[in-house]
Image (cartoon, rainbow, N blue to C red; front, side):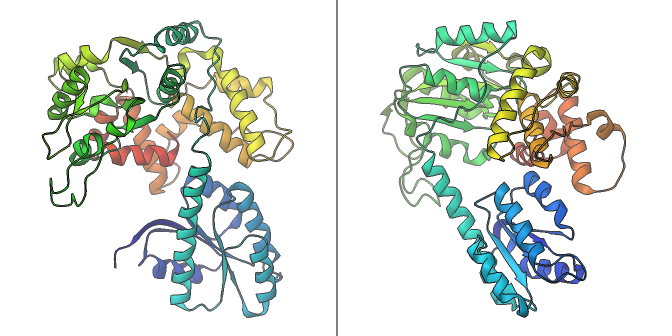
Length: 447
């Protein structure tokens, strides 16, 4: 039986129960994590993509009321309302477990549990979690996804925003250059929203997260029977953007053989799916982005020179956050206001001392890292005062305080990114990972 791709979290203060439940569930799900202290559960959920939580109802010795479980379930639901929680309880606490169902638990299981019942309950919770995520996506499909701050006090950034106003109404190809986390996606979406195509699709294609053997099929589509698994005709992502804007992110990752096909598409505005000779007329606007030095890639014959000149009709270099310190206050306040509302903590404020800490940090992960830092700080602060949880870059890089594998993995990834100045391809090669694998780990650690 193939394991389901899902991350299950088990929270119980009994190590034997954690071991037994993990060994059983690991047979069916790709990742199973355990915590013996409920005080760590919120931080863990923030830092990981969890699909279901199995939560004990008692954690304090001598207190068997089950109220601990209800309390921590409520905390989890406040943080992630759609995350399914399964309560584990003794036979005498069934009535309390039923109360837990009324308050939002997805199910409860009795100790000692039946293995089949445990699997069935967790499997159903995972399916429910995915259904909730899809429903949430559908509910928000007509909402604008551009939630970021586009005002700026930085002269460099003000110049870029003015340039975007001028080029947005045109159909000129635009190349956005900048480090990871500088806001290339946000600016691409802003260009689309200021164009005549704003009511048509805006499709983001991250070439760094697509497996190389799927590039052509995902971008251009295929005809039924074109290859072994082509059971039906499939329109690629570019074709599905007809009349809209295609944002090709990490364009430097495109293989040479597909660079030729993309060049032909941009020049002739005609597209052919894999396995067919029919040409389809295409009307889309292209925006490209990369953190790679494309001029160097051209010189090393890794990127076609004619394609490079075709995609950079307008080239926009986005400064790193450390180069626009005037905006740190503006961005931090924006993120704080958003997360105060999301996590129901209206009294949190950024003091001058906290702002000074933000400005003294180099932000190698740029705006994305600042966003993650503020959200984490809001979640783990009390309701009255903001506790700023700043990244400790140099301390993490140069001082090994424990041998936790995940901590070491994060340190190595940061070192590789710093060494190669944010170049994903070179960092991945240095780490012995594929680009897609490195992207997944960067998302996991909020880099």
